[in-house]
Each structure stands twice: as structure tokens, then as C-alpha cells.
Amino acid sequence: MDQVGKALTIAATMGWTILWALILGFALSAVVQAVVRRQAVTAVLGDDSPKALAAATGLGMASSSCSYAAVALARSLFRKGASFTAAMAFEIASTNLVLELGILLALLMGWRFTAAEFAGGPIMIVLLAVLFRLFLRRRLVEEAREQADRGVSGSMEGHAAMDMSVTGPGSFWRRLTSARGFTAVSHIFVMEWAAIWRDIAAGLLITGALAAWVPAGFWQGFFLTGHPMLAALWGPLVGPLVAIVSFVCSVGNVPLAAVLWNGGISFGGVVAFIFADLIILPILNIYRKYYGWRTAAFVFGAFYLTMAAAGYLVELLFWALRLTPHARSARVVEAHIAWDYTTWLNLAFLALAAVLAARFAATGGLPMLAMMGGTPGGHDRHGDDGR
Image (tube, rainbow, N blue to C red):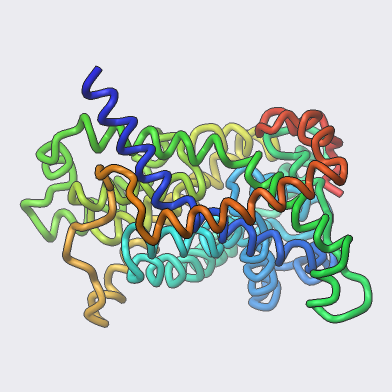
């Protein structure tokens, strides 16, 4: 029981440490989504040109950080005419190039990890585009589109169907501060939390268990820390595999990345691990439902190769720039909650969250949340057309 209590204490303390950053990130994401209409850019995603991939990346950065939502939204874009390559680029940007992820990485692991993530994301997108150009056959894309059009529901499809964006006349500030803009921000903010809180909670609990129960010697041996060259080669290969079996997606994998970094995984291995939220087992099953077995297998292979390659390239780039971190001092906190700046920030942002939640409830959001179930699976009850 003492060990269980220790694991829960670590999980709770780390959750308290990152709470304000999560609220800030989701609030900023909601603001962007509320004033940028998603359909406005789908017309430029019809091929795999640099322009289309840049648009897909920008759209993803302005979209959800939830892996399930990213996969469902990518399918919606694909069905509306986006190329398969652009849809997958959107997925990568939507889960790995978003504000909340960068904030948490800086908070728990340092700014160099944030820089690595934002450098590695475009690298992975370029590598994926090259792989798809070389090996993705038109027949496979046609099979995937036929399967996607059959209406097979999957996790977060209802989340993808939400479009609360405000795109009427007036300046950004005017639209944002209007009653409709306030309502849109509140709805997107609450539904984002409803979609992802289980993943964040799971990530914190897994992190607490690993930090409390797994001795440092195990990680050091597993990540070959006694052999620096082998460790650098091993890390990006094994990082995605750890992610696959951890079931933790999106922002929820940052605390676990901190544990792995302290345990000895290489810098490139951390980058590859964080990217791999798009190939965890539940999402691989969604690929199967959306696009069929053959396409799901192709996506898994292409993603794994590009995640590992991006990890290697980021490690080399940061080594050349002498920016590779060496101190294994990520914030896997065990201390008790104290009255410090973190507490005051949490209280301030909890007040902001309360205001948004109240607006959500006052404008008819609760029935929507109940109908959608507040969980990824519950969203299947909403339509399947992704509009």
C-alpha cells in the first residue's frame, strides 16, 4: 500500500504541476479554433505538394491536440478531397506541433525538448511525404477512400464533427469577444477536455507507477546507458515501441517521456517516443476501421520509420548545434503541493476554466456532452459524415 500511495502521490503532484499549462494550452487552442474555419483551407489540400503539406501542417497546429480527434479529423479531410499524404501531415502537426505540448515539454523537461519537438515535426512530415511519394500506390489510396466512405464509425468522430468557428465580418478581437465567440471558445475548450482527460490521467498514473516502482537500474540497462553509441542508436528504435504498448496518447505522454529521459533513453529516443502517440494500439485499430487492414499496416510501417528517422536526425542536428541536453533532471516530482507560484498560477487558470465551463453549461453544452458521453467512444453516436 505504501508503494501504491507513493505512485499516486507522484501522479497527483505532477498533475498539479502541469495543470495551469494544460488549461492555458487548451484555452489558446480553443481561441484559434473558434476564429479559424476548418473548411476554408480544405480546398488547398488536394495533393502532396509543398503548398498543400504546409497548409495541412498549419491547420493541424491550429487544431486539437487529441490523437483520437486528429485521426478522425484527418479522415474527414480525406473524405472531402484532401490527399492521403496531406491528411497524415495534418495528423502529425495536430498532435505534435500544438501549443499545449510545447508548454508542457518546456515545463517538465526544458526548452530544448520543446525546440526538438517543433524541429522534428516538420522533419517527420517531409520524410513521410517522400515515403508516400515512393511507395504509396494509387490502388491502396483508392481502397482506403472506399473504406473511409463506408461510414465505419471510430473514436472521436463526433468530436471531428464539431465546428463552432466564428468567421463572420469584423476583426479577430471583435469576433473573439462577441457573445458567439465566447460561446464557441467555451464549447471547444470543454469538449477538448472531455476528449482527452482520460489520456492525461492515464499518462500521469502510468508515470507515477513507473517512477515509484521501476528501479533506475532497469531503465539504465534497457536503454543501454553504459554504451553511449549503442544507446543513441537504440533509443529512436525502441522509443515508439514503448509508446505503442503504453496506450498513452497526445499530451498525456509527456510525463512518461520525463520518466524515460531520467531513466536513460537517448535524446532522439524521447523525440521518437513523443511522436508515436499516432501508432498506439487503439489508434492502429481505428486505422483498420477507417482505411482497411492493408492501409493501416502501411501507415504503421511508414509512421514508425519516419518517427525513428526523425529522432535520429533531431539528435544529430542538436549535437551539431551543441544543444543536446545532458542533465537527466526532468521534473518527475515527488514533493508535496506547496503555496508557490505554481499554486497561484493553477488557481488563476482554474478560475478561467470555471468561467468557460459556466458559459458552456449556460449555452446548452451539457446535453451535448451527455449525448457524446464525454469519452472517445461516446462520440460515435454523432453522425459519421465529419461535417
